[in-house]
Length: 587
Image 1 (cartoon, rainbow, N blue to C red):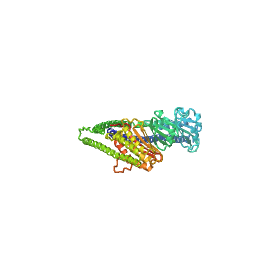
Image 2: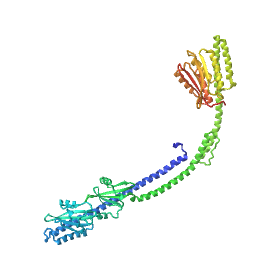
Image 3: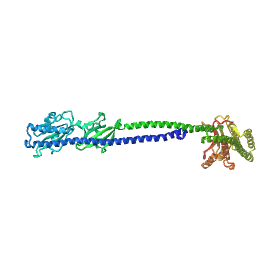
Image 4: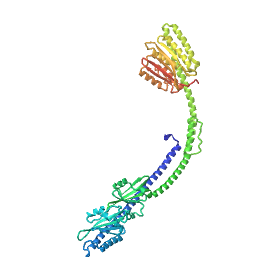
């Protein structure tokens, strides 16, 4: 759709609405995006702070277990190295009870510890709960136990797993701290401490949090606190998060987006990952979007109403002006604008009414003057060609008399009389095509008397000539040119053919000869003459007077698009095509 071709009413609408709507949409878009970005940034910062707090609390739990291990190492050394036992373990029930009491006391003062067991080098097991004694024979094959054999008494953390020994319940995952207990006096190994922390203790840290939490060791999930299992992390997502250097990120799980934040717990080589549904933190944004949407719709409605009012105030008078201009463009100069306003449009309408009146008067005057000019010019040019033809014919009679051919001169004189009988046509400058053919035939017969040895002709018009008119002496000058400039200089007899042709819109009369033809330079000059739309009366007759005369008369009578066209080729011949309107009848 071309913008220039649409109505002013639509232009105002198309231009006005975007200038109002686009800023609103841009404001709507940027404000919501900025607000969302701000919410996400604050949420990420909040999640990172929460992760730090949670990791500190987990670290406190782990630190508590390590402190308990240190305390128990000292307590067990104190019991064994007293005077009664002299640094050695024994099967004394009192020593068993004393060590068991120390384990129970450690649980009492360290509330995050689930259970404690001590396995001495004599394969005696001390524990805080009798259920830890189940599966005692598996202790030495436990991977943490094997690691403790070669340790130097430092704290070793096992993985969060389920097992059926050294635990209260085989269904409850626990994380176990192992520590080799040395005799601080002799350096001999006394036994091995196993301090269990339940995964429920770790999960309790996450209580009252709005996020889902995961604890990974490497890419293995140790424990999680997730409201909906469908929101769990995929293995490839975990790998990407662990490899990413950013602490926080936004990931998409169709159809939702999630905020992800992570922090490392260096004490046990864990990674804490928190995940929050972005919809939960952008609830306020949804409310803002709803409010902004209502505001935007209200503004759009107001703008449409304003646009309608503007269209009525501005475009309606312009539409009436356009309708009036269309009437005037159709030639209805009696049309008058009826504007009641005194604004610019009203002044314009009043001025146009006055101008229309003047144009109507001027057109009437111009039409009258043009018609008079056309009649005068056509008559003047017509009168110019008549003496020219008479001069050429009298020249033929003179030359025949000089040659002593009096009978031929008499025949020419008779033909000349017949010719003028047909050509006078009651004094009219316009004749029927049928009459024009008779005039041309008379002229050809005159010329054939003089040039009987070189001239032959054929007139073959196949289309209906009835009611078709043409300016008088249109064909005769063309035939004369064909004889004097084409056949006369030919070394052999020649022929002139007059034929016609009909197309969808035009009618052509064709005058062709097989004479000597015209050079390219001469043909180009002739085309220049024929393209002239004004007739120069001062040009000499010798300069293709007949052709130019005929061409200009045709244009005057039928219109500028009609007239003559010429083609020619040296030693082949010349063809002149007279272009006439197909449906032009005598008026």
